[in-house]
Image (cartoon, rainbow, N blue to C red):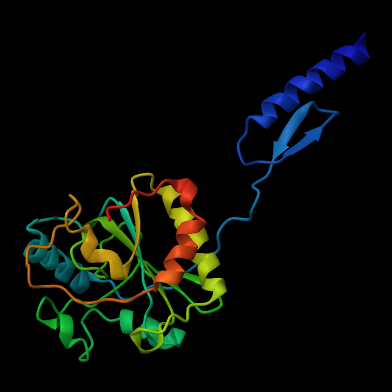
Length: 242
C-alpha cells in the first residue's frame, strides 16, 4: 500500500514539474520534490561604460527636444525596438573609443549638423562574441535616426569599409542570445531591425524625427546577418513594418 502511494505521488510531482516550460526535470525520489535548472547558462555581459555624464545627458535632452519635439526631465526610454549595427571598424578598441566621448568625432560630418551629441549604443559585441554593455539599457542612445527614443542599439565590431558583410558566427550567436535576453527583460519590445532598414519604420507610430531632410544611407549589419538572427528568434513574434 505504501509503495503504491509513493508511486502515485511520484507521478503527480513529475506531472507538476513537466508544466515548467523550458526547464528539464531533476526528480528526487526521496524528498518527492523536483529541482529545476535553466537549459542554458545565463547570458554573459561585461559592463564597460562609455562616458555618459551630465554633459552627454544634457545634450541628449536637447536632441530629444529638437528632433522629437519632447521636453523631458530624464532620458529614460521604454524599449520597443532592437536595432542591430556594425561599427565599420575591425578592432574592438577603435570601435569602443569612437563611442566613448560625449561629442562627435571630427570625421562625422554627415550627421554633425543635426547635433554634436556623439553616437552611442547600449551594447558592443566583439568579433569573438563577447558582449559588452556600454550604458544603461533604458537610457536613450544616439544610434538610429528617428527611432532612438524607443530603441536599444547593439553594435558589432566589423563591417569593413562600411559595406563588407564580415560579421562572425560568434557574433551571430551572441546577437541571438542578447535579443532573447532583451525581449524577456522588456516585453514592450515589438520590433527587431537592421540599421539599413530604419527608414522603413517611418510610417509607424514609433518614428519621431521632425527634420524630413535628416536621413543617411546605411548598410549595416548586412542582410545575411539579419536573416540569421531573425531565423533563430522567430518564436519571439517580432512585428514587421515592411
